[in-house]
Length: 102
Image (cartoon, rainbow, N blue to C red; front, side, top):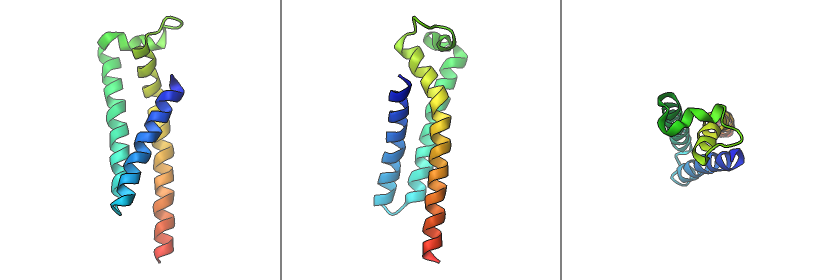
């Protein structure tokens, strides 16, 4: 389940950047992607904190975890990793792009 969530998070990020690149607004697309990742993580954290549909059970439910619990755990773990890697990549692209312009 973790790899599926990681793939989906990366796909959403790359889609936002692709749309931003086509509109010649790469940085804006990256900011939207990071904002979307932060929003998804916030939703997962809120459901974990409130215990909605036993979301906090992802920590100790193994081997009888529901798909929802697996998904919440994967989002809480992989979203910060994806966002950090994506932010570093975006920062590198922006720096290289500005170095080429000057």
